Image 1 (cartoon, helix red, strand yellow):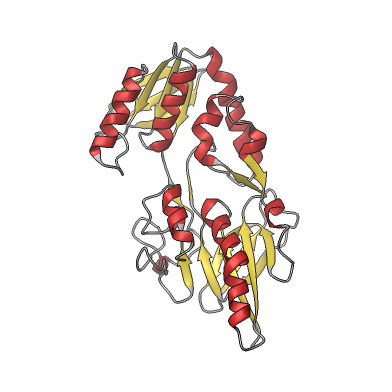
Image 2 (spheres, rainbow, N blue to C red):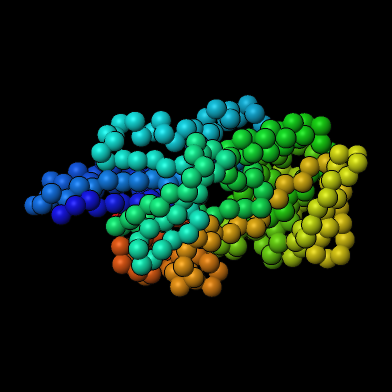
Length: 317
């Protein structure tokens, strides 16, 4: 019957988990049950050569001793040496467009690519696991993992001598970062801007209130209903942050933990929600807007974000 090309776009928690499951379980089961000559192969498209353990980012940025960078960044290719080349192919590059009629994805070279030529990747089944990006490289890999490493090292170096820290963003990343800094550097005046009327707005109000109380006991000041609008470095090496209430603050360390956007610019507009997440029909099958297209993780319309959403979704997908 020919080849069946399973393509997974994205190589963070969702993409890697899905790729390994398909290679270990789905393809062997399909080949065992197949009554024809169909060959199944998985192609993983990744914009970077390395996986980033970004769940640990709040702890990583606070100190080089808690989670070494060598354990936070792992070569993706090394994790797939157990599979034979007939079943697996890794392509380093950024998905830049998709032809729904031809069922092809255009992949352009990134900083980490070894080629300068765009590739057309055909798919029979497509899994979208491209995740989301943030404004700060602390929380994702913007093309090259070296940029994220540089941002982490800069923060690690600045904290021991800092007297003031401002964190913008009251989600899990911002809240956890405030806790890590307060634990390691209790003398620092740490302020957390929730950007809303409470912390952790995707969770029950009681959880946000408990987090705020815990942070307060550690010396963290939480400010609600104020957002950071812009920032600029000063000659003295500090950062001036302009706030939505018309005031500004000058601090030794500024950490931006907001601005999450789904990585879907290469997809047809008809596949996306108003907020540019991939439309999914439900959270059980993870089926996308058209047949043989699926979405998982932060990029999917059903997801509330976070690792638990991904862990629970890989097998059903």
